[in-house]
View 1 (cartoon, rainbow, N blue to C red):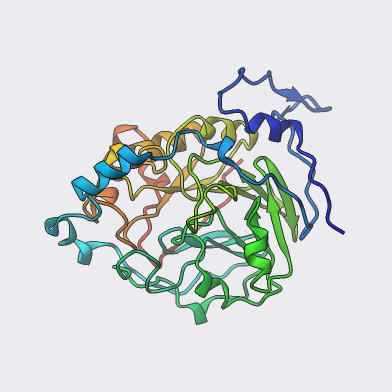
View 2: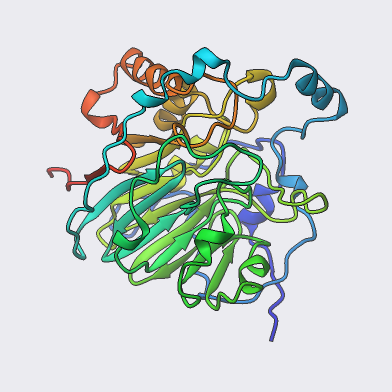
Length: 363
């Protein structure tokens, strides 16, 4: 039986475009230790069927481009880097290696390219926005191969999807998975998966969470939008994910996002983020993309806003989606990290195919 969705107070608040009043002081638990504010929502049931509003345009934090902007973009023709901006393709770090050994106490990340990560957490293997295809609609072929061969993946326990753009929701890749694989998706996107035979799809609104195998999956806001066809603009939601291990270690996967107010709110709701997987590419021309894609300097600011201990960049060096030179995101990121005075060891600028294990911090 289909269940009517009843928005929580947090959900209603998230729909307001205005920033709203500042958060109330932190609540304190029974033993006097600070608790996150607002309290986390109770986990939603896995695979539940829900009814959503027809559109999520009220969640936009910036207007979508109008006819004048589209005409300017077409007139300027700034779709791809100039030839000199493509010369450094061979310098993009590419170091495929076997995945690290992992058990229930391991938290590790491996970058397959673009926004696709293999996250090992709480004994689970989780894929983020998996795109193993050589080409996606409307773009040239990959400029770096997938860093992790599909046949070398361990059993996939779950998938998280940030939104429905083709470079994040790739049907050929997803259809390689067992149809019983648990999928965590934005509100309004479950129908896409169910039409393809997936049987355990949990779609969430902003600030909602669910649990699998002791790991919590929370869906959080992003400054972006959704569209897959000519008629479905903002018909499903967009956002990022906070994955929390049973021991409390946290990995934030930003998905696709511009810079804005949501990062500090995510950090307040989910304190102690150990690692932020942040997009740094597809940002030029800036007048066209600033509302929906962070540039490298903004990605560093967002990491600071989150209160995250470490950052690993993504969404660059895989597909040519915009006009900046292909190696520029990495060089600008390293300069911005250094300018911000942040410890170099906390910038995990991995090569495509590389991995890092998140060690427990000393008490």
